[in-house]
Image (cartoon, rainbow, N blue to C red; front, side, top):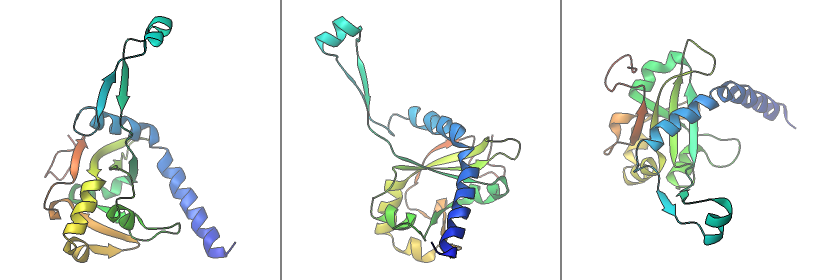
Length: 183
C-alpha cells in the first residue's frame, strides 16, 4: 500500500469517526423531516393474509418505499456558510465523485446537510434536507450552475438561491434568511 493511500485512509477514518458521533441525532432529524412531509416518502397500508390475522394478530401492514440518505455534518464554525449554501465533493478515491453520482442519478435520494452544535458531543444545531434527484436534474438542465460555482479543496460550493427551483425540501431548527440560522 502506498504512503499516500495510507494517509488518505487515516484521514478518512478520522473524519468518519468524528462524523459518526452525530448519527443518532442525524437519524432523529431526518425522521422528523421526512415523516412530517407525506410528499417525501410513499407509505401505504396492506391487508394481512388470513393466516397472519388469525395466527399473529396482524390487522394491517404499513409498507414504505426505501429512502436512501446521505449525511453531511459541518463543524459549528461553518454555520454562517450553511445559511447560504452547501458543498458536494468533486473528487473521490473510490470511484465517481459525489457530483458525478448526483448528475448520473446514482446516489442517495436526499442529503441531510447539518451543522454540529458547539455545545455538545453528538448534538446537531440545525439541518436542511436537500433533494438530490432534483439537484441532479437541475445541474443537468442548467450546466452554468456548475460552471459558476466556486470549486476548491475537492468540493464545489453551491448557493441555495442559485437554483431555479428550490432543492431544499425540509428544514430542522432553521430560520430562513437570518444570520443565526436557528430558531
